[in-house]
Amino acid sequence: MFDLDTLVRPNIRAMKPYSSARDEFQGEAQVMLDANENSLGSAGPERFNRYPDPLQRAVKAELAQLKRVQPAQIFLGNGSDEAIDLLVRLTCVPGQDRILILPPTYGMYEVAANLNDVGIERLPLTADFHLAPETVAAVVASEAKLVFMCSPNNPTGNLLHAEAIEQILRGFRGLVVVDEAYADFAAAPSWTTRLAEFPNLVVLQTFSKAWGLAGLRLGMAFAAPEVISYLNKIKPPYNVSAATQQHALQALQDAPHFEQMRRALLEGRDWLAQQLPTLPIVETVFASDANFLLVRFRPDATVLYHYLLDQGIVVRNRTTQPGCAGTLRLTVGTPAENEQLLQALREFA
Ligand code: PMP
Image 1 (cartoon, rainbow, N blue to C red):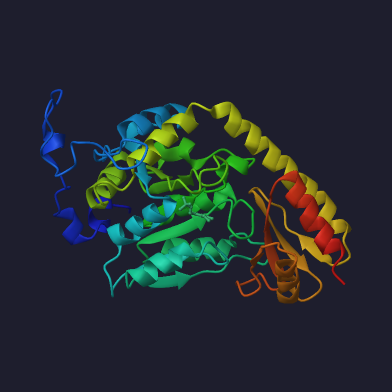
Image 2 (image 1 turned 60 degrees about the vertical axis):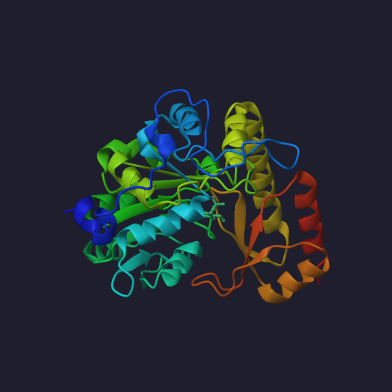
């Protein structure tokens, strides 16, 4: 059975969240001399002399409406990478506990585990990048404290089957993190719609992909309010800057632009997915629910990778990832960039 309080590290259970004098003061502050800021103003063109809202209330209020969740079900971080790190630290005692991952998958889960001296259990996906029934059973039986499932998966692009994820949510004793960084490009509902059913579910999303705000560093975790409270307790107090919060609020008001970019990227993906198989050097274009395509090439993929670099085109070499021999991961660009990539590949000899 899943029990959050026993899952969380004992030292964290006992911790009190960092609180500032400003959090305790309820009225309209006239004079703020509590946080050693500079009351005179800011160097540079914009005023950022005050610390940001540690709980990002305005952004969460907007997001709650958009995502149809409660603000108390939202954690915001310095990219979803921060949420990944905090989830590992929330549940895994260094030198003792472990996380579970399903390779090939996103590399930061391993980085976060290694950084925190936490073990890694690996249960590979099938050759077509899905969860075999035996793997689902092995996840359910695992003693790992949390499992990271990336869907749509990076670098493969496919969604994991909902039935497999659901079985894991019902049986696994730890936290189940469904990383939906690419959800906006997927033809499936987000797992945020199932939060009320599963107290052990954490859904990760990001402003770095379809919102086009990778430079801003803003990631989201959606979960039961109890899980979110624990994340808030252990995060650095001012983990999302005032500039990021202001900009995210503006972006959230600009839904038409988001939607227009999202559609254009989907068109670009479909165009590339049609064109690439016409090239003799292309062996397989894997189906994608993300803004990239994993492609297996007939010529040596590393040679091809360096050829593309020589043409000024940077893609991701995934040849050494488990199950990804001979592959490059191609991000969908502008129509002109997609054309340029295709032309370079056509001219490879
Ligand atoms: N999860 C996955 C699957 C990703 O591919 C990425 C970015 N490459 C992230 C999380 C991290 O996103 P962020 O920019 O929000 O830290």
